Amino acid sequence: MQKRFLGASGLEVSVLAFGAMNFGKGSWPGVGGTMLDDARAQVDRCLEAGVTLFDTADIYSAGESEEILGQALGARRKDVVVATKAFGTMGRGAMDRGLSRRHLIEACEASLRRLGTDWIDLYQVHAWDGRVPVEETLRALDDLVRAGKVRYLGCSNHAAWQLIKALAASDRLGLARYVGQQVQYSLIVRDIEHELIPAALDQGVGTLVWSPLAQGYLTGKYAADPAAQGRLSKSGNLAGTDSARARATVDALLAFAKARGDASPGQLAIAWLLRRPSVASILLGARSMAQLDDNLAAAAIQLSDEEMATLDEVSAPPVPYPLSHQRRSSPDRNPPLPVAIAYDPG
Image (cartoon, rainbow, N blue to C red; front, side, top):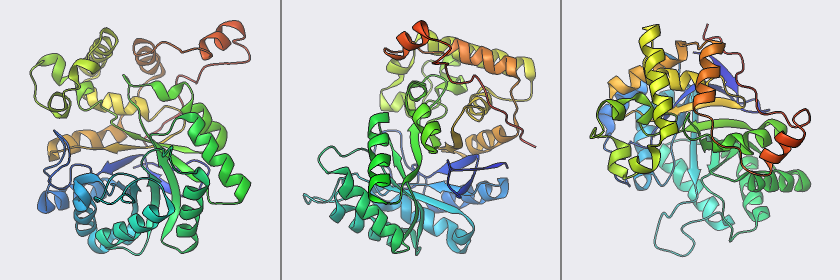
């Protein structure tokens, strides 16, 4: 499996990664239920396929996901990149959430214990905390890096201005920078293309993608059966996802899959992401082994430029102001993101 560096850092990750949000009893509707035996089998399959990045968070199943991931990796932990996150509520105390110095240091120590490891390769803040000075957050994270408990830093679910503010503060204070951002991205959720990806490209920040199949919508199963059961239907978000643009995108995926005969709609949706700028790795959140096998096979799929252009066009969201004005009034000075970058699965 191909590997890429995360942004401008020296951290190399496989283009497909495993997201362990389903490990443990679960915290939200449609999430969780994968316990240790099945988790071990999924981790084994990922390692066989060449996956090197495994991602979790302390809030997933109230820490149980980290525990199961650590046990499933066992002695192989040293051979992979382990990523986790902090921010969410982990107790009843006033300091048991957020990005304060106190909570981050305590959260990191707790994650290390649950994962059964001495270090975290990529430690990510799970959200922006508007109540805590970003300098306090970054100083605490830098201390964790200097102590050897964390190797690299990242953020998740930030707006572009929040990412840039954090990077500027790190540069001003001489602190470790975020080298990656973990964000939602798919053919039908392309908001990050307007500002977050341009910011990441400008600042040397790599992009890790979550929900690449829009919680199963892009597999086409809801087009075939609107009553199909899955995370999207259980979460109650299907109505908000289903739209004329989304349905046209799925139709295009289904048509390409039928014409090619060598790929499923979900694999094509992942292959599209592998050719988007800034994307370093895509997190797979498969629940079953069949889903995981289908997702992993996407690493060997290569879309043509024509297929990329068609999918890009049919799924294109409206461009918000002021970007719409910039592209209309001075397109030569404000070009859009490229439709595709080179990807050779080898």
